[in-house]
Length: 632
Image (tube, rainbow, N blue to C red; front, side, top):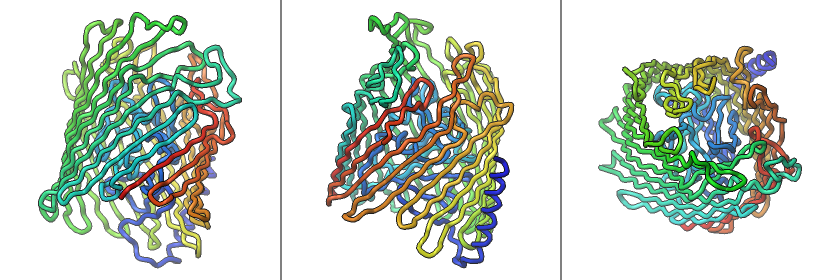
């Protein structure tokens, strides 16, 4: 395998250098290549130093994705597992969900008491794109970015229709209705969004073998009835400054938790709520200095319960009432020292807290909190064709009960060389942290206040270039990475401890082409060091993702998506369980009829029986109809 990687890298260098003399176009500061549903960035996005994938959303087509988890499932290097208490679990190159930092329009999202952002509960509401940072992470993003960054960027009002309404229908009474309103005025604009998502569960594959606790028909313990409301107001001040206020609210009367098919479980969340409020401003202080300020609040409120599966009665130790919230302030400055030298610097303060009460270990309301301070700076010098980026961050962490702040340094750097034909080679590195979440520190049954933060030193080398051969256009990108990870947190003797170190390395290749129609072929490899027991779990070693898009006569768009996952390993007590590899195939048809657009789809066409996670089977064949009306 190492020889194959070396050959791929050598071929990449030869092609890039050869193409350099064949194309004499001048180098642009930033150029993108637009294919259906994907944007490949040939030069780095602002603030990033490592690999970035940008998932675009076409404003003119009906959205088939029910939530953010479905939207980014086809991004190379990502693996999304649905099921269990956490709802959805995202991994990036083997890093887990609670090691990844999530943003909405640059505002950090709270993961609550367990530190897990459930992407199944975030609706696709006028999203412009989702940016996924997979490699080394700039110091500008602060701490808790060890596993990567996911930034959800909403669409501006100018790019939205005045009214948009739609409905989607799937098998087993799964449906979604949504309505958005947007209006721009001379000095400000307003956008409103509301949706309802309901499901009675999903239908399993016909090849699913029933167990003692799963009948093989409808997996109805995934049922939910979810309501989302979001509002945003933007205002322009003196033509140079802008301010924005965003608010969001998500609620579910009941959020059922799919149990392991090999265990007798009945669990659910009751009265689940999430609420968000933020204010931000962009200010031009002078011709060379600008500032971005954000104040944000993100809260969760839910009641958790477990039931006797025979009698249906709640166990005596439940319910458990949990309230958690995050309050933060972030201020960034951008200083353009010259046409070739830009400096960014700033800081962030964040406090997380929770209140918990149940009939077990928390008979009285229990409150704990933790605080984080980030100070960061980054310098980018464009020496064309070479760009040098150097940054450093300092993070301070103070959990409740600690005697003093704990400090860590997070440096980052990259070198990018841009060839004449807009090809580029980038070498980047960073040191990123992940602080323990509140559950790991304060849980009465398994918490450990002496936990150290997890640390990762991440390195990456990428090569990418545009492809122009007569009627063929596209982009090819390859990345090789190596990560040194320390102090991984896991349970030992039912107590959270820093018990593991791991080395991870891998390779990614993405080929985007337009040859008669749009093609996107991707491959990813994740490997772990010989002594890394912890990291061999859950992530497939090899993964393939294929996307084909074609415009047929009469304006009919056809999209085909296929994905393959290699074997995955899971812990089941003292032993490991091996999950079989599988292919999934999806097909979609869409067409617009003036202001109305329609989309039909078949997912898991072959009705494959598979498990994304041990004991958590995926849905069988599914059909969808999406109708959307837009009034401009």
